[in-house]
Image (cartoon, rainbow, N blue to C red; front, top):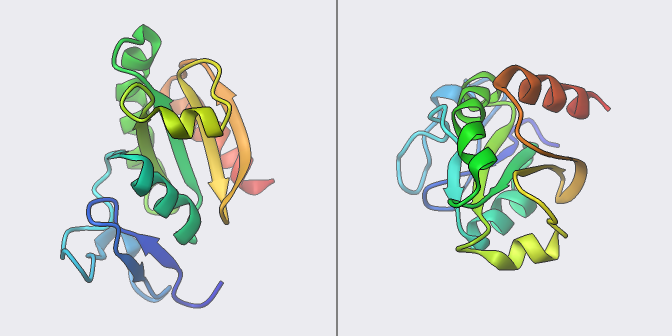
Length: 146
């Protein structure tokens, strides 16, 4: 990875280089000028998910969920809290499997909520079931160290 890793904007999909000398937490997208990180998981569609996974140099944590899923609704505030703790070192995103079933099928999602951690375009860790924020953060930090 170069001195300026690529960070994909969750709003417009623009690929940005953020030099290590600059705070990623304060960086703005060169295309849409919105903050690259806002402490909230980004809701993505299929194309946005693929762009995050394949173009970002950051690890990307994906929460596969659905609006009818009770455990998913329970975990949503914890996932948002985890985003505030893990960003800007980890990108946290959400994909509604009901609205976007193709990625769920491609990644073999059998139950929700399921979280998958991607690094350099590949799946590196997976867990299923609702978790609290502390458990999400601990799981991600453990998986990133591996």
